[in-house]
Image (tube, rainbow, N blue to C red):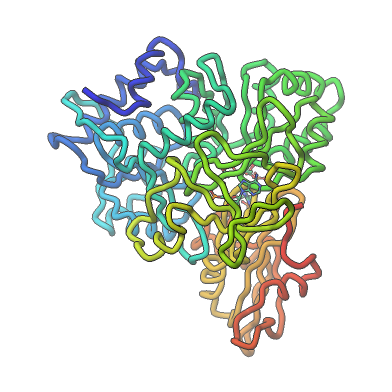
Length: 501
Ligand code: MCA
Ligand code: AMP
């Protein structure tokens, strides 16, 4: 029987350790066995889930992977939910994706039960049954990831099994993944960085993933110092947090960390701009030269500094294997020359199928077969360098992509606020920090920042909450009446248009 390549490959590593988590270790054979049983349980007598969207609200441990593989093997589409989301945010995803079931655990079920009941969505634990599993073609959708963009509410990115396979093959080749690799996982599993770059690449290669749960710098340092890993992948904010640990520790404590990081065969940074100063600092501390790469939920990874060769600070290197990249100017002309900025457009088998249920937006995001990323870059001395983004409404904070429009919509629900503009301001820890500028309603008192943050907590994930609040009499607007965000940034005394570095 033809089966998904990821599954077929896992059989070759049957006795190797796939996952290590607080609950214990799971070999590839056990992962295959448990996910087959869970798939049969999900099918519950049906022959194929036929793409039905099954959401996962599970901690990032072995149970998550068993459930993910079970959904895939039963022919379903996996919709991983953020553990930090509010009920309102889950409500959007569950409705938009037309989710039919939520797989959750005893400890999390209470958080989503009321919502599932109100939407008539069944909740399941991962169970076990025996039965025949369907053949699932690689061309079928396997994953639906929600990503914020230039629209207020996040959109569902439909990713086929073939898309993931192409993304993984490209990274396995470029970064030389093998069965002897061991990698820690501390990134969330509703985004590509943790889900594909770490988890899927490792399991494709027969490597071992140590699932550490939420990022905890002390725990990560303790494990790194034991020499447990060969690879390490993180967002720039995590490197900032690790540097802070080095700065705060006596040399006798930090020396083993420095040595262990220096021994890793590769350390990668991505999901947001890695400042050149942080690149240099990390190398000075550990002797390890970080490899920076660039990607996006819709395309997987597109550009990377080389494993062998120059890893240039402030640059994202060259197109990855199997990925075509071009720069397009505002007049629709492909840029061939160096030092001319243009929009990054990407083509290849890793590029997503479409936005779920959004035909017009899907069509508008492509130029023929080229996906328009909205990111602007230049080529300098042969390498791509990211300059910024076309949209002022996208903010990258600690690796999370946030929609300013979504945050504005939440803040505007406050009865004392008449107008609101949200912008990203340069920030040493988060890359960009969310700042809200508001105009009060006549005669009303706008709450102070801590109270406004608390008020927003029912509506927005904690990482979307504003970190700065300014109250003004009026927002700067252009002749059409549209708020001019570069002016808003200027009002706050920051350099116009948050730049890359
Ligand atoms: C946590 N907080 C944040 C963020 N994370 N605020 C703004 N931005 C954030 N990213 C808030 C917490 O809610 C808390 O607020 C306060 O900051 C202190 O939290 P702290 O403990 O310091 O943070 P943390 O829990 O250690 O989290 C930091 C983190 C996390 C580990 C960097 O944000 C993270 O896992 N980021 C990675 C996201 C990711 O995987 N992105 C990849 C997307 P309060 O005090 O109010 O409770 S995929 C992608 O971008 C593409 C494909 C690519 O290229 O990879
Ligand atoms: P996401 O939609 O969460 O997948 O975020 C993708 C976005 O993260 C890209 O469109 C870029 O704006 C940004 N990004 C990812 N990697 C880098 C990088 N190395 N440098 C600058 N921006 C990056």
